[in-house]
Image (cartoon, rainbow, N blue to C red; front, side):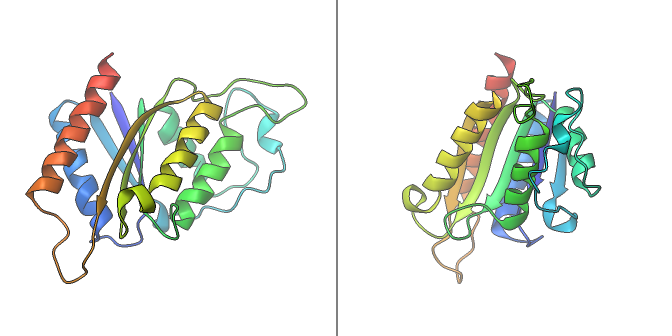
Length: 194
């Protein structure tokens, strides 16, 4: 089975990648093939809602030629999509939002003259999130938005791993966070095996 992780952190040595690496290592140890895409390194233009992607129901087919074409294919080839992002202003970072906007149109053929299929129907989606507030006040809006996104896209939402960093002077990762990340990865694999 394949997993595609869309990394929304601008920091290559930050909290979100530290947490994600534990999840990714555990997924690999359980037999999953994992790929990581750093969204800040990609050219991802905002969706124009032109509906050009609605003309061909067999592929995403966005009229904009940027790095989203490759990301569409990576997502379609995977059974599990993980969105990994720090929380900025109670939601995901800008490249994650841009990618989500582009995918909701290109992957869901709902917006043309006739209603077509969701190209990623049945795919599993999970979140790896870091924030500075208590999770119930820092990441709740992000999770609720993704739940609605999954329902709309006919995807299965598998849950969110969220860890808080209260103090910039202290180390982010510790044994408890690592253990929760390993447990979360195990839960994802069990859900995929159902």
